[in-house]
Amino acid sequence: MTQANATLTVVEPTAETSGTDEFGYQRVLQSQRLAFERDRYPSIRTRLENLQALKAVLHQNREKIIDALHSDFGHRSRDETCVAEIAATVGHIEFASKKLGAWMRPRHRSTSKWFLPGSNSLQAQPLGVIGIVAPWNYPINLALAPLIAALAAGNRAMIKMSEYTPAATALLQEILAENFAEDHVAVFGGESKAASAFCSLPFDHLLFTGSGNVGRQVMLAAAKNLTPVTLELGGKSPVIIDKDYPIDEAARRILWGKIFNSGQTCVAPDYLLIPKGTTEEFVIQFARAFAEFFPDGAASDDYTSVIDDRNHSRLLGLIETAKEAGAGIVPLEEQSDSLKADRKLPPVLILNPPTDSRVMRDEIFGPLLPVIEVDDIEAAINRVNDGDRPLALYYFGHSERNRDRVLKHTHAGGVTVNDVMLQFLQVSMPFGGVGGSGMGSYHGQDGFDTFSHIKPTFQQRGVGRFTGLKLLYPPYGRMGRKLIKEMGG
Image (cartoon, rainbow, N blue to C red; front, side, top):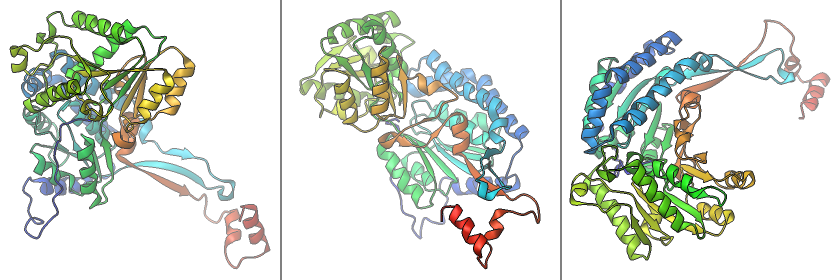
């Protein structure tokens, strides 16, 4: 998902450290487990009250959230924060509140004739204590969206925030503590050592949002406790433009996805596959759209900074190595000294970079967009399938045949057709990766189910009533063997 958690070292417990609680995790985990034991199945009323309390926290602290994110980023677009951190999160609360009763009801399943008059059902049961590791790029939403699912499912939760967002961390600690007891919801900060210790805790489920490299380490840490994990990672999300889609409209929509939060979004368009001979027109239209969106250029208050110097330098390095490898470099605006000081990086198009260049190997996570010409849809599909399975894929085109071919012959965590990133904002749809972009999903009912045990129950009807299965009680006779044969045995 991000470059946020660059390092996480899995530390083996030793005789000297196994009894310590350096970060206070074990104490809080124990208190949450005890609280869960006292209320193993919260009522729908209790769960709805928790969700509405969380909604009130967001509305009452709107300005504080905006200020905290602005502080952490150096400059964060006010409106982007309102859309991505507040409105998107409130949308999940409202949807969960509306659907919670249906999610909690037993789910009936059919019963084989051999087992009638018995019946089958599934019951969603809270797991217990959920661990949530949030990244820096959308720290409020990516901490609270999993929390919404955890609370709706009747759980307790511990949240580990990124070291790169200290202001957002301090604010969440403050405003959640005012509304939730520590044995219900607890928020922690801390650097990589703290993250390692957190992921090594015996949670009932652990959700991690971050990079693929760190995700592997998280799985190792969780495996020691057989903790089930949901990994929301990232990767290189491709955009395919078909020959029948207007370049000018595609350029505007792709630009929005690429510059939102300065491209620091797990589902942002990572690279573009475009029909041969259309690159020049795309460059013109992309630049025109940028001028319309930002009349003052990247200095605009609507344009967000890169999170820190390390990531700013990393992005400049990707541009330089692509240039050295022979790619064409088209900056939409020169980066002035003042923009550099504010870590504002204007969009850069990178034309036909070599496949083995860093910009085509690494997740970009910034406002750089490689543009690659391909012969046809088949070539685009093959190019996508040559890499790891991405978190998102975008197809622009009006051909149902080509659209269906792309959907059926590529893998991606989610897809938007004729736009970008909007699959993430659908509150009723699961969000998650596949292969190298993650495992498991949440949002909507899928989040509720992820943080529940969907317990199957068979109920035999009536005491003393006859069932065909009684013919299988030993000693086995002629009727019993006939029944076994009828069953396929």
